[in-house]
Amino acid sequence: MVNQNDSDIVCITETWLSNEIPGDTIALKDFTLFRKDRERRDGGIEIFVKSNIQCKRFVVPEILDCVTEILW
Image: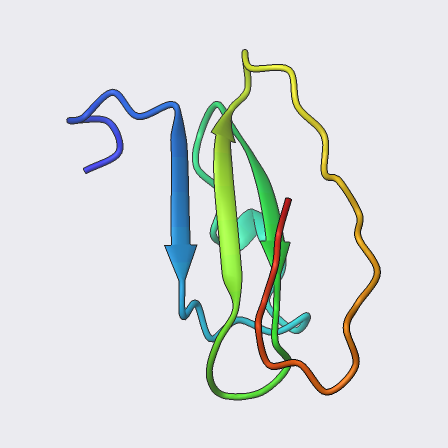
């Protein structure tokens, strides 16, 4: 689907991933992966950005007791 739509940025929610799953197992060719795992059996976010797009992850402080996941 990513290739068919010539996507530059792909955002996925409810990934259900944990740090036990290495990034290279879910990598997309020619994309940079940014991910925020929730460390339980729900939630999680990942963003794939085409490698030719200059970008970096913007780190924001975590909000305690907040179930919202944010990835900038």
